[in-house]
Image (tube, rainbow, N blue to C red; front, side, top):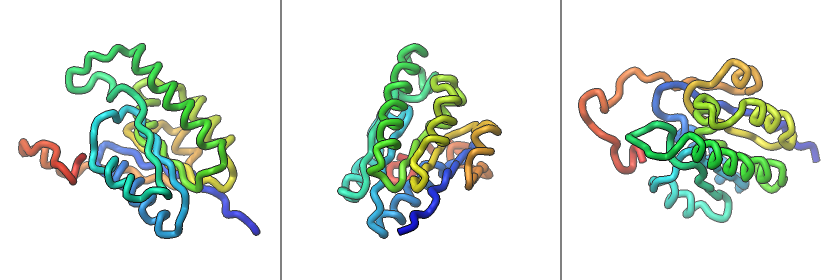
Length: 177
């Protein structure tokens, strides 16, 4: 049986919807009984997707890594701690990607980890080049650099046109988290 070439998919940009797009892709894949893994970089708090994803078991697994986002909302976590946590999440991601047991792997917010310097771009470049041929690999996050864009097969940039935060409307349960 010929296996299809796995794609490298990148969702980036300043607008909302990067993680949501990746989760939509996972939901579609579950309809075909594909095994999906989501490794989140920097997300450590409760979100609705954590509960929703458990409902998709045994087809989907999620792992949260990191210590929150660097320098956000008065975080007291040191840069050194962020780097260590990002390395730990990356090591899990690398091991899981190479295990061959997944059809799709999402590295949620890994692009932001690269942009903030808590991960090295050569690590992610190597992973993309070494991943199993048939694995679809999805990366999300702000500020994707040209070298990452060049490696991807599909790149979508989310552009903010209008956001409720501009009118003082904070994050909404079920919509934003």
